Image (cartoon, rainbow, N blue to C red):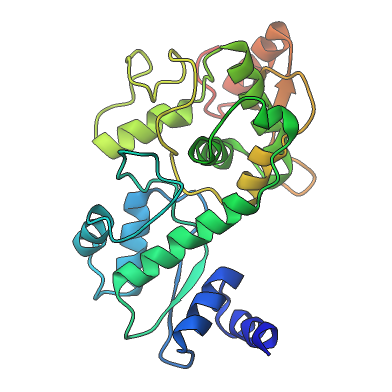
Length: 269
C-alpha cells in the first residue's frame, strides 16, 4: 500500500521519492499542495529566491534565518560550520499550507543526505580519504563544469587525478562562485581558497547544489589518465556542449587555443 501511495504522489506532484515519503509521513496530499522546483547547480542564494518566488510567505530573510538557527539538521555539515551551500538537494518539493519553511528545508537536506549515503564510492575514490562533504564539493564542481551528464564521469576523473598529483584543479567556476557570492570582481590572482588556479586541493564548500548525475560521477568517475579538459569547438551528436580530455599538456594547449579562437570563452591560451 505504501509503495503504491508513494508512486501516486510522485506521479501526481512530480516530486522525488524522498519528498513523497515526507508528504506521506505528514499525511497531507491534495490540491492545496504548492510545488517548488530547485534546478541542479543552484547556489544557496538562488535557492532562497526560488522558494520565495514559489511560496511568497517564505521570505528570503526568513529562509536564511531558518538555516542559521540550526533548526535544519544535516549530517553532511562539517563540524563548526553553518554553511548549507550544496547540502539542499535540487528537485521538486511539495509544500502544504501547514508546512513551515523549516519543514521544507529539512526535506531538502534529508534528500541530499539520503542520496549521498546511498552512494557506493569506488575504491580509488575512497583511497583519497574524502569525507561526505568533500564528495559533495567534488559533485558540485562536476555539476558546474560538465557540458552534459554523459561526460560528468570524465570531469570527476580529472579532478581526482589532479588531487592525487597535488596539482591545482584550475576550475574557474570556483573563482566565479566567489565573485558572485561576495560581489567582488573575479580575481584569478587572489590567495582565496576558492581560487583553484593557484591553490591546490578542493575549495572549502560546494559551489552549488549537485544533482544525481553529478553525485554519481563523483562516486564513480571514468577510468583515464586525463589531467586537463577544455571546451571543444564541436558539440556532441545531440547538440550539447562537450570537452576535449587529455593527458598531454601540448594537446591541451592546442585545444585551448582552438577554443579561444572560436570565441567559446576559454580565455587567452
